[in-house]
Amino acid sequence: MSGHSKFANIKHKKEKNDAAKGKIFTIIGREIAVAVKEGGPDVNNNFKLAAVVAKAKANNMPNDTIERGIKKAAGDVGNVNYEYVTYEGYGPGGIAIIVDALTDNKNRTAANVRSAFTKGHGSIGTQGCVSFMFDKKGQIMIDKEEYEGDADDLMMTALDAGAEDFSEEEDSFEVITAPDSFEEVRKALEEAGIVLASAEVTMIPQNYVELKEEGDIKNLQRTLDLLDEDDDVQAVYTNWDE
Figure (cartoon, rainbow, N blue to C red):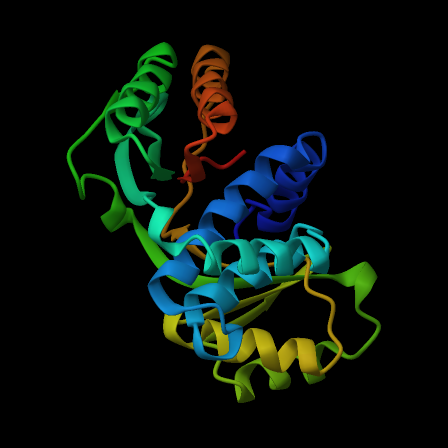
C-alpha cells in the first residue's frame, strides 16, 4: 500500500459528517429520490438504490429514515428534478479534483463550484481533463477493530464473491471491486456478519501527489472546505496524499 491511508481519510470524512449529519443525510436523501425515480422503490431489483442504501447505513442513517425516504420518493416521483453533473479541474500544485453534484439548478451549482476552485487558486478544466487519472471502483473498508476473524478468511470471502483485490493496512482491510460487482460483494460480506466501515462506488487515484508548500495546502483545503459546504455537492475526489 502507499503511504496514503485511505481509511484515515474515510474516518476524517466521517468525523466531519458526524458534526453535520444534516448535510450527509440531505445528500443521501437526494440520491435515494433519484435512484427510486430511475429504478423503482424495490432495493432487491434496483442496483442504484441498493448502493445508496449501503452508503446510508455506512453513514449511520437510521433504517426508519432510509425507509421513509424511499416511500416519500416513491410517492413523489414526478416531482424529482435533480440531475447529476460532474466537474473536473486542478487545485494548487496540480492536484486533480473531481466534483460530483446532484442539483436542480445547474447554473447555481456551476457558479459555486467555479468559485470554490478560484478561491483556492485552482481552475476548472474540461470534461475528462483529470478523470483519466482515476479508476472507477467499488471500495469497501473494514475497520480492524470491528473484525475479529482471520484476514485470510476475509480475503477469501471477498474474492469468492467477485472482488478484484484485497489489501491490508495498519488499521483496516480494503476490498476493491469492479463497479458492476460491488453490490454482490457488499452483500456477501454483510451476510457473513462483517461490519463495513464504508462501502461505495468511488473514484480511486492511480497515483497520489504530495503537497509540500504550506500555502498550496491551505489553498487546496479552502477549495475542499467550500465544496464540502455546498449542499449540491455529493462527493469530491482528489489525488492529494494528505
